[in-house]
Length: 224
Picture 1 (cartoon, rainbow, N blue to C red):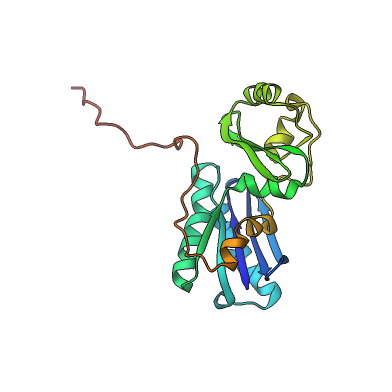
Picture 2 (cartoon, one colour):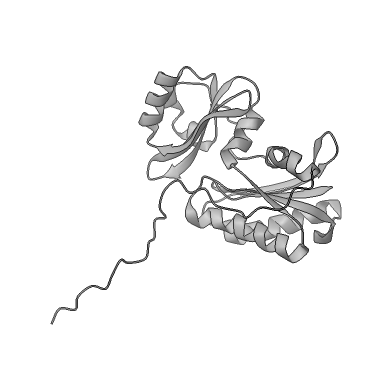
């Protein structure tokens, strides 16, 4: 089965095409653009280019997997709205996975900190043991994360662009090749549901905090 993976929870927008078999997830094609202001402009062309690279058509897809965050409100909703819209139009199931989990899974064995940039001088973070989350996800200042790590125990290394940005403060080696959620890991996290033919799920965004823009609570009085 061909599965499309989408993620816009970080400054990168990612579209990847994966083949899911009875016992493996195989990468077919992947496109990624790193631009926190261009998710809406870049994702659709990435999807088209990913499909075109393999000669596949949207109708060939059997499922869509989307990273649900945590991530900033504006960028995250681009990927989720696109995945939900395509799933509905094509009549195929959509599955959501935590974007941090994809990086944690790809990081492999050992105890790993995954941190992505949450802006406002904060990071979204979680820790993983052999690819399985054991702490988080949470949002915090980097210094607070360092305190949490000191209490919870030493991590072997870190991954994610937040870890790269604040690596000196965390004091652990950073996997600089693993900054954004890989398509293969996104699909691998949903592979069991895909193989079982599980019903599609609502793609609920994981924000962890309120959006920057909020509706005014009331009208301001007019001064005369």
